[in-house]
Length: 285
Image (cartoon, rainbow, N blue to C red):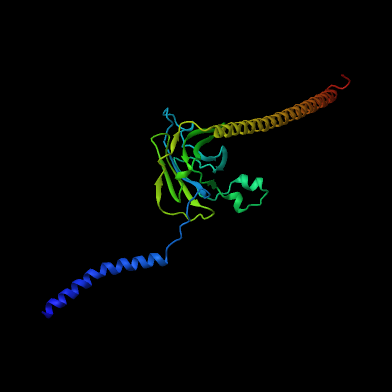
């Protein structure tokens, strides 16, 4: 009888261990619970392009760059027909990564050496709008501007903190967006898909306008480069011309000097010969 009571007590102890662990977990999660910010129509999301994977070739199987190298991708984010984020360019990358903070040469030049947190953040801020959407696209930078790679249009209602994953079998194979709420950049580890996202085979109007601006800027840079090269060639040509003139002048002077020396030597030689003949043949001229 006593043995049976002990067995029952042991069974209760064994059964109580999992319950105790569950209770302990609930208590720990209660005391260390991270406060979740509720999402509503007034919520403002902070997002940045974290990673992109690009196909080795374009849809026509051509290489992205004429020298056979990988593309130089940069990203644009647009919302309400405005560009709200332009990333720096990742050179020669099929898998490109970006940080929420980046400093470019333009930041230093345009801000005259003064850098603040607002000038180096590569973050788009988008308000949660039930009927709104935003677009993300990648472009390959080259000397004549930037070529469209691909992108997505995404409903704002599908935004929530975490890693937003987008995938396709098109040139832009994969895109990952980091999403947080407000100014907090502590990124939750969970990832999710946007079911309402639509792949972009062509850039939206506002992005087309930006591409045209890039092309104009590239044209101006090429024009300035041409002017600089032209002036350099002119300076080089002028320098060569001046050098040739100096060389011709020097050659002319040297020619005159040699001629004069030759005449003087000829005269001296003639005098010497006449003097020698006079000694040998007195009275003969």
